[in-house]
Image 1 (cartoon, rainbow, N blue to C red):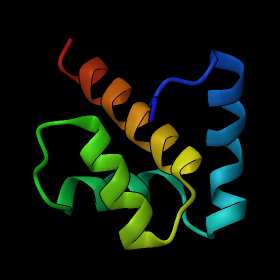
Image 2 (image 1 turned 90 degrees about the vertical axis):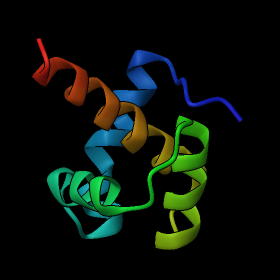
Image 3 (image 1 turned 180 degrees about the vertical axis):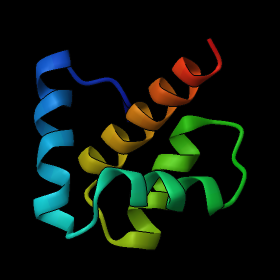
Image 4 (image 1 turned 90 degrees about the horizontal axis):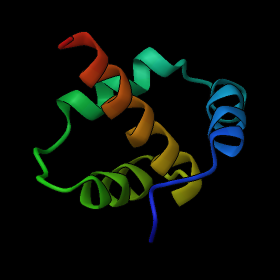
Amino acid sequence: MSLNHSPETHSKLIARIPQVTGRDIPEWFTAIENGPSFSRCEERCSWLAEEHNLSHGYAAALVREHERTRRARHY
């Protein structure tokens, strides 16, 4: 499973997540941060999908966006 979508697909997925899930992106980031510590993004994506009943596409977009914003905070 790939965690990489095209930038356009990624943006569309992220924009739809609040409507589809009823939770805002910061809430999902908190769930990821409070979840189990996985060393691989693929593991985090699978956990998020299974634990929160998300499609793997949305879970992958959330994990990718979380990693992107986390890296940006450290610079």
